[in-house]
Every structure is written in structure tokens, then in C-alpha cells.
Image 1: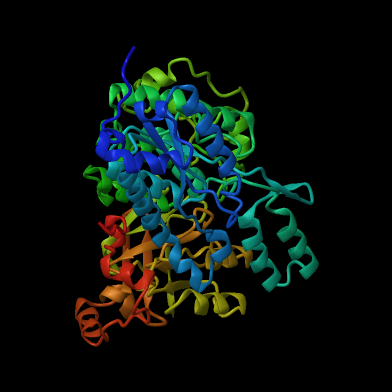
Image 2: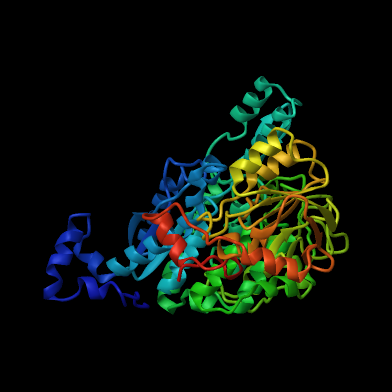
Length: 558
């Protein structure tokens, strides 16, 4: 019989001098036998803050049960979560991206302090996942990530709806296309219970990316939050973590550069969120893998978009779950030589071994297109450079809105002021909406612009208005949208000098974003910029602004 790995826990519980430690642990239920076996921390993001995480306490209990069945000692602890959907468009949203760092820090802190030999982290809302993975990467102990699962769709007038439906309904109401009663009905029916937002938004994007990365069990990303499959995923993690402990397989063995390329590839094929760029860069940095913005361009040239999934497509994640999730997609990509099959995963097996017996999608399904008939022949995630974004910007170009846009700037120094102007009709056809001072340092916190993008779509201007920001977007955003503009306005970036009426061209084909001013005029305007002064002098946001890097580097704080 193989011995359990007690590399870290023995420092806490072994020897006569550790009697006080053992005494404390007896107070939370430890018995003599528990001091002889591996301790596995269970990082739970449960809270009643958001439906994405409101069920995760029960999942944590199932994980605990699975660990105990495999003669390991489980210890559940909590970290925080916040809700983008609730805080969107408010001052509170500035804490959203910050929460990724707090989650990572807290997992590292608790596991490092308590001497857990392995860690299983459970995440639901979109910052949970990269936060958990960053924490696991820093610790580099046998680890598994479990996705909390997707929400089931709401229904209104026999149509499936979700949280993005509500945001877009706000724009429709402002345009007087729907009544207040209709808006309230959509509000009441959009969120029927627990689980992460239902389209290929950031949560489902990151869950899929993490599975492709090899850090969650096969199928974990494509399960409903309330389902037997998800509960089984949790129970099975016990046997899996035991195997990782026995073989001493750690995140560094799994989270390799080739594994990150697999994650990017799957993200592109699913039409995933722009936030994946930010988070994958940060996760790679945490594990010590070199990953750059340009890697998304290089990979994107060869990888098509196949998933007809919301927000730009028709279908929800719950519908993809019914036809087999992302496993058949990965098998298809592997068979075509588009994934690295030799990458190690948390099963202790390679990706190719995990996918060996996976069946094809049912005939006539329309959610995942064949490679011969893609939605878009190359990536929807386009990295743009130019005199408006010398260090890069991230665009989400589905192709439905066209591949280029030229228009006149209308400038706002906050999300709130932009939102007011969109809703009261001041933003018109041909405008390029500029929302600045919303970057990692300038916000601080790099808020998501789901409110403005949804209001634009709701007003029927999706093909006629572009939006550029040094902030970022929700995975639910769609339209002609460009975010992560670097350098940001608060750092004196060129986005800070744009004036109303300036002409701007966005060209996805040439991958350029151009402010139609001479170099001389740009230099002149930059020389007149005042130094940015943050209104936050103390607290979380002030500390974050001092330490955070550019969005082009993943907005990391290490």
C-alpha cells in the first residue's frame, strides 16, 4: 500500500512539541488517526452573496465525503466571492477584479498556514476560477479545481432568458420598446436558482479553459449546478486527489505552456469571454509559464469559432451540457491535431487518455459546428495595436457586426456618465463610445462595461456603435467592443487624449486601432495631460492601484 503524502501536515502535527497544534485540531474534530494521514484543504467560495455560489456549501460537503472515503482528512475553509451581476454599473464593481487577488491570497494564506498536503478549490462566479487557480499555482501542492456548475435558464414568453436578457431589457425599456411591467417580468424570471450565468460568459468560459488546462476532472465544466453529475464530480475528487498525493503530481506538472495553449484553443472554439485573456495571463504568471498577448494572436490565426453560444450566439450552456459538454469538442480538436494530447491532467493521465472513449456529439445538433463549417474561421478574440493602444487592446469580434468600424469619438471619463448618455439617446449611429479612467489603476479595479454594451444592444445600435475602454467587458458583452486598452488613461495612455469628434478606425483584419491624429498632435495633447489623482487613499482599492500591473500583463499584483 502506497503511503499518503504528509509533506506539509507533518510539520504541523508530528512530534511532542506539536501537542498544542494537535490539541487545537482535536477541538474541530480530529482523531488520532487523522494525524497519520494526508490533510486536504477544501477551499469553498460559498456565500449567499450570489446565486453562482449559493449551493457550493453542499458541494464542499460532498467533496469532504469523497476525501474521507479515500482515507484522507478533509478540512473545509471559506474564501470570499462577490457578484458582478449585482454590482455591475456601480462603484462596488471596482472590487470585482480585486476579488480575484483576494481569493488567491486567502487560499495561499490558509493552506500555507495550516499545512495542507493537498487542496481542492470550488468556484462558481467568474473571478473565483482564476483566483482559485492562482492560489493553487502559488502553493504548488497536489490540487484540483471543481466548477460549481451552470445555472438553468429562465423563461419569458416561451424564450430562454438569463441575466444578460435583463441588462438588454433595460436598454429596450429606455427606448420604450417594452413596458415597465415587461421589464419586471424579465427581471423576475431570469434567475431561477443556483449556478453561474448561463451563456458562454466569463464563468463558463473559465470553467471550460480550466478543464482544457487539465486542472479539473473531465466533464467538470459542463454540468448543471444542481445535478447528480455535479455531486458525483465532487465525490470523485476524493479518489483523484489521493492519486495526485501518492504520485506527488502538482500544478507545475499540469499547468505547462502546452496546457495553456490547449486552454486558449478551447476558449476560442467556444467563442469565450475577453476576460479569458486577462485571467489566463495571470494564471500563467502565477505558475511561471511565459504567456503573452501575442500568443492569443498566433493561436487565433489557426483556430476557428465553433460554438453557437450566447451572448453572440443562440444557445445556453445548459443546452451544451445536454449534448455532452465540451468533451466531444476537445476530442474533435485532438483528432485534428489542434490540441496537445500529451499534457498531464488531474486524473494522473494525459488529455488524450482522458478523451480516448469520448463519443461524438449527437447527429444534427447545431450548438457546436463542424470544423468544415465554422461560425468564424479564426479567433473572435482579436489583439489590436496602434497609436490608440501601443501596448495592445482586446477586441471581441464575432463577425456579425462586421470586421471594421470607423466613427467619431464621444468621450466619457466614467462608466456612469456613458450609461446616462446611452440611455437618454445622446449616443448615436456612427459614434465610437470612449469610456476611460476605468483601467486597473484608474478605476481602480477595471470595471466590466456590461451595462453600456447591453444598453447599446438594447437600443438596436449593436452594428452602428463601437465602444472602446481601458476597462474590461463581461462575458455577456457583445457588439463592436474593444477593452483592456493599454496603456490606460490613468497612466497617461493615448486613450486619455481623445476628444469628442476625433475620428477612430478599428480594423480586425489588420489588427489595428487608429486614432486619426498626427504624431505631433498626439505628443502635444499628451504633454498637456494632468497627473491622474485617485480618490482612494486607503483601503483595498488604494492598495490594489499601487500594486496592479497593466491589463496587457494580466492585471497581476505579484
